[in-house]
Amino acid sequence: MIEGSPDAVLVHQGGRVVYANATAVRWLGAHYADQVHGYPVTGFIHPDFIEPVLARLAALRNDGDATRPSESVMVRLDGTTLDVEAVSSLTSWRGEPAYHVTLRDMTFVRTAQRSLRYQAALVDKVGVAIIATTVTGLVTKWNRAAEVIYQRPASSALAMSIGDAVGASLEPAAIVADGGGVLATHHTADGQPLIVRVAATQLDTGFVLVCNDETKSHGVERLLRRIVNSLDEGILVIDGSGSVTSANPAAERILGISASTLVGGDGRVAHTIKTYDVNRRLVEPRDNPVAQTMRTGKPFQGCITGIDGPNGRRTWLRMSCRPLDNDDRYGTALLVSFSDITAEQVARERLTYRATHDALTGLPNRAAVLNRISDSLRVRGDRRLGAVLFIDLDNLKAINDSLGHDTGDELLQSVGQCLRASVGPNDVVGRLGGDEFVTLVAGAVSPADLADFVSRLERSLAQPMTLGAATVRTQGSIGVTVVTPDDQRSAIEILRDADAAMYETKANRRRHTQPKSPNARNHNGVTHDGDRYASRSTQHHGR
Image 1 (tube, rainbow, N blue to C red):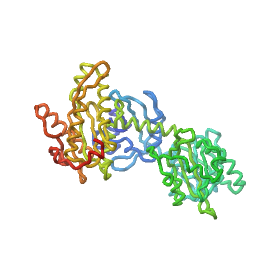
Image 2: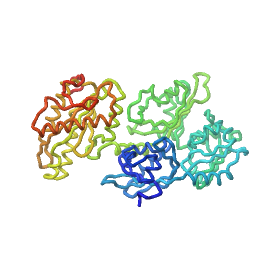
Image 3: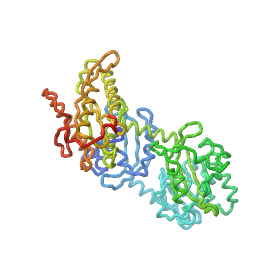
Image 4: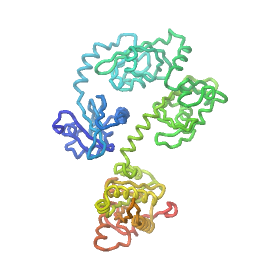
């Protein structure tokens, strides 16, 4: 039934497609299902929609939980797009958590609704800004008055998020829920503040916003202060010397620092806050986004930054910064705005971790290993890939059969710990599944050092392991492929060659022969001995 459905049906697990029905294969521009199996699911989502899609998936907790229908844009294999409505639900695939996605083609519906509704609701000859958005907040109509008020041409505004287009956080659904009208502070394309009265109406296809510029009819400075102080978004004003001159209550709450402390003294307390990038790496003070805008005058928007508050708690912010009017004494002042997205960021990291790590051992999974190989081929020095070791446990099945799968799982965990303890600081250990592990050796390695490293791994794996009440012994067949500086193989080809070398090692063991050094394959997949390995410093990597 699903295979013949007129709707596209996908199942993705660990961030990759594991099932696609015939409709999905056709919509994606593939000829057969194998072309999309194993493909990263985010590769089929337009970049503008990846973040909201991941956020909706992160909200699913229990088997059967489903998202509401939401608009999205599918990206086909040839790069063309298709407007769709998507519903995702949490399910299982072969005993593991997965996501079931049903997609409906919205091309005809969108065209008809735009033709029937927007033509009647939106006009270009009125003196107020009339803006239409999709349900997800993308601008689909931007009239002439909107161009004048916001100093942004329609060609630039169309397809932007409504918040980016008006220079402020704007949730049309919240305005409708609160009665349909609100007074807000927006910004022109060059950062000038506007006092705007916003009225919102919901349509089947999204929202229509009527924005009336009331800046001139208000005491702008007094009203802006009142509005800024009522925002949930933190606001800092930093003068050209780098001193904080203003902080609203939300900034105090989010940063955990009082306004008097932020503004007091030389006003530079905020610069002492430790910041981290989205990968949790500490950012040098001169390299944080605000410092860069201060140096270059270039604005940024939506940057995700982590900070450590006075209580030691890590808070994640979505931050924007833009220059204001020139300060005669020092230069350009900055307006910094930020919101607390800690819960959203933690959920996203948790989802990403589950998609890239083996649940049993905590090691990077096959997808993550392939990504690490690809990444390491693009760098130089100690972090460039030097060799790949493919490790297969020879007697896991026997242990499972005799002692049970719980003991087998303990063995896999112990092997993972053993391998991690045996590698260098820049090396990576991953589990491909079943009884297969892989070690990515970073940097150049000499034939002797690599042979010695493999021998020590074999001895470590052969040590007796106490698992509950049982003591077991295992051994691993290890295949090696060396990666040269000019290697032209893909990540999959490198892993395949290491796998083939492992099977040759296993075959040699079965023939009761012991090679002088571990089997290895060059970039053509030809087996050769350890004396052909590249040079490497054992002392540097602690092996």
